[in-house]
Length: 296
Image: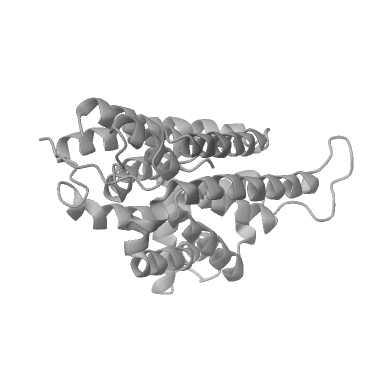
């Protein structure tokens, strides 16, 4: 992998990680176009996600510190276990278990079989329809301006329960399949469970931190080895992804307060159709070989 490819893939990672359009799908497609039919590999994708998750840490730093502090104090009984931040700490831990367990169990398939672009096409389209359905349900729960507030309004993060945390976690685990989208899966689950768009999105960001950092650190051993991608370009791509990702977080949290997810649904469906055409015409390889030929 050269420096230009690293720059482009870093920008792609930063732009797509937090939007419900699947960063791994974009890495697969853009990687093929830049590497003459090669896949940059799951290790490169996982490591560059360390950059975008660092952006989450910075953006939500005060919230994260408060949650960790209250959770730790609850362990020694200095704050009640019912404290909202202490509960959030436990919910993030519980919600992270499905993707950690399934990620380790299906590691070989994640690195190979599940990176087939036909699977990506199906996930882009299928999850796009699911997100659209969930978003319509969320819109029905929103209060109508000038009218009395509906009795059953959208839930906030203070309403999070153990059941909901596990369901969120199972939805996040689906993102092990390229095309699903970590944020797309978890946000859809949150909307189906009755949470507001901002609440579902905010929790999706917090929930991703343990899993993404764990995966990225675990895959560090494969840089320059199985994926044959050198450290220099990988570090550059990771830094770029972090800077771009921070801007996307700030924009998305403002956007969803007054807008729906419809543009992302349409984008997913359009991209699925485009990829299907490119696959059928032979412009893309459904199962491209991992990029080889490391550069230093």
